[in-house]
Amino acid sequence: MANRVTLEIDTTAIRLMETGEGKVMKWASLSLDPNLFEDGVISDPPALSAAVRQLMDSSGIRARDVIASVSGLYSVSRIVAVPTPPGEAITRDAVLEAAEEIMPLSMDGLYLSWQTIASSEGTQQALVVGVPRDIIDAEVRALRAAGINPRTLDLKALALARAVNKEQALILNIEPSSFDIIIVVNGIPEVIRTLAWQPDSLTEEERVEHLAMNLELTVGFYNSHHADTPLDPATPFLITGQMSADPDLVEKLPARVGYHLESLTPPLECPKHMPVSQYAVNIGLALKGMTPSKSPSHVKDSYLPPDINLLPATYKPWRPSARQVYLAGAIIAAIVLLFPLYQMTSGAMGKTANLQAEYTSLNNRLQLIQLEIRSREPLKQAISEYQTIVNMGSGFTEDLSVINSEAGRLGVQVDSIIHQGKSITLTCQTEPESYIAFRDYVTALEESGRFATVTPPSERFSYVTGGTITLESAQ
Image (cartoon, rainbow, N blue to C red; front, side, top):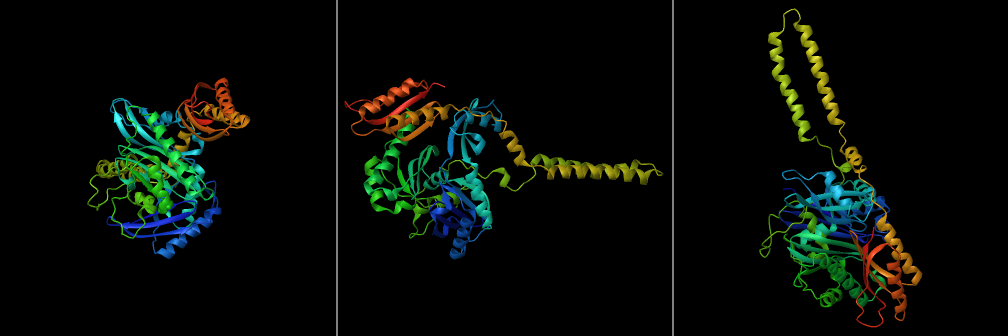
């Protein structure tokens, strides 16, 4: 099998890696100018393509077909249950209908991809991933300008789950401008969160506390939706990414969150001096769609997550469907069989004219079929189907407006908001002496009429000034 080249694109650096025969051959990285990105989105594709070419030239890692990563910022993923009649395959329309009910973003601005991960009688479960169109469009433009054909795009979180290769794991991927939290259960990334942050403005203790708080919120969110099977406290905890090289951070975090830290041992043969945890995304990309031919002796099983290619149909090379190929072949075979028979049964006087007419007719039919095949445009069909989806309501947007407006009015700081279905979990805080403002905020949410229930944190102390509030939307 030919060598694979993978490319991780982060807002602060790009990482390139080449693998072959089940082992890592080369790797290299290059720091980027932060001005190439705006709010996590590529704002200068030509400059990024120049950086990619520079890294390829300096490292000697060259390829036109590259597997590239896509950031999880502004993306959304959900596991949805899709009703499916027995014996029938899951359909695009059914997946989109199920997804639009729980996706918190408007689908008009997303590229949507999915894969079936489990089946039961009358229902199939699918992992659905939505990525903003501008993120993928800008990345593809930059790669093409660098002379690269991105045949496959993969979400960073899915690549990380593949590199970790665990049936169950809690993964924290820390970069200088964002971090990813992935909860893997039964080999499937059940929860994926990507958050922006600015660690340079924080002390070491504040960094640890900020990451630990978000880990606890994410685990709490998972446990609240899996009350019968919460995350096992013995779940392996793995830290990857550029900032996994910070020894103080790696040492203090496990003690703070209470999970046992494990080293990354991917199912690829890696040189001893390679910073494996910093190239975890590249390793996961290299494993995409394949079981490694060589695995370390301590890796006994394989728990590869869903293999979803996020590259939209508009960027994929067009190929005729099996039905189109079969139809063209059947017509050509019919011509081959009928033409000699026609020659044998034609009258002598009209033989030449009849043969010419038949040939012209068949040739016209072939040209029409060839024209039809060439004119197939999967993108237009996909967009046409996509635009028929019922527009999502504005309920969640109005909920956010109430939450933020009341917070601003009462001087409450909202730290985070997690939304799933009709459930909203928010973490907020007032000044140490402003417990009355916090109570007024809870009362304002109750009286807003937007929420069926408002559950504040348990008041174990007399003056609560913040915490987690759980809301159930009334819409």
